[in-house]
Length: 276
Image (tube, rainbow, N blue to C red; front, side):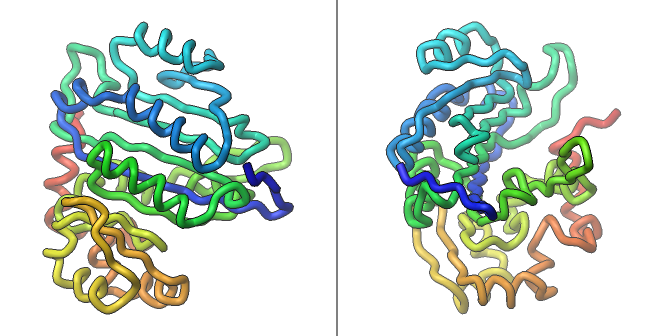
């Protein structure tokens, strides 16, 4: 294990998604995904899981055996957070299956996503290992979209900006976050969240002619699975492309919120939300 936390630590952040409906959400093997990710993180970083929490509870389970026992007690696992002594290692992951987060009699959206978010301190893993970890999960669990990017850990948790006050720290959730939450299944219609250093794309992105032109001209592009492709950009390429209007028109999240003017945004939101 290579653990040398710095004064200005940075972390790699992996986010992977697949579209779900109610039946898929119920049948998905969340336990297998969690255990596989624990195994991969141990293989690549040497870290062992330190804590498991379920469904936003404060109750902590410390061992794999305890995790298996507690998992069986839940009829539905909506959210699971796995820590690796995170205050000291700057490393954790979370699995979410939000379609299960409704009472049995409630009306549910038609679609949502199953997602995994992984933060790993840059001092304990190399970028090629981060990619290998992500691509193993894509291959084994058929994730359909995702990305990897590096963030300064004193300013971000995952990729969410941290607000620091005199006495506390909070995360900043804004309108851009809600736009992504309500429209994220658009990644199967040729849209991306936004541009990152490593982007895991699907066949719909190649049918987006604006985006595919850039994919063919910039960075490195390779097949990860039968359905997913890796588009990796150098930092100079990323900085020059991310503010182009033709790229922003393919993004769901932008500062000007332009995606809300796109006709497909209403269609996607209707599938992912329930009218009150």
